[in-house]
Length: 187
Image 1 (cartoon, one colour):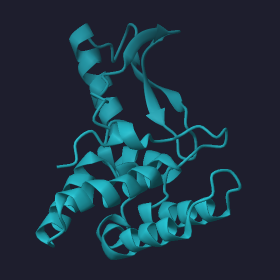
Image 2: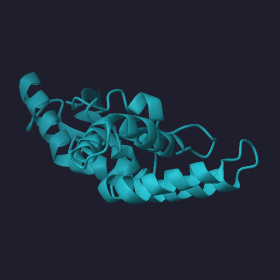
Image 3: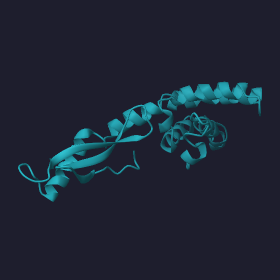
Image 4: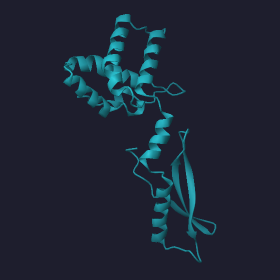
């Protein structure tokens, strides 16, 4: 949502009416829908000046809720509604059963311990899309306050968070979120 600056809509003539067009997120779909609503007649009773049409167009877009954070979170995060804990569970199961580059049992136990002790209790209920740099900073601060050394935090715990986030793939096998691109600074 931080990259969206809001929209005023595009005003155009359609038949005998001025209409406004804008983009609206649709639940269950990745693509947005192009919406349209009448503003006023082009001439005659109810005709509005250009500035009044622009003001009314902004009002129509605002009334639709297209630019609200609530709608964005409802639609976009619903599509990516997996929590960090659910993704971590899938990831652990996947790395145990894969045939290529099998994981050592000691490494598996270390990663399970990292998830059980610090990571899942602190960011497990967060939607995977929100498990980002700011969430990791909070986690690192809690681990630091808990007495963990910086080397332990950056060497054991942070890579596990990155790998879990990077393990989320779409139906084509492409990464949804990149573990390295999401976490630029962790201390």
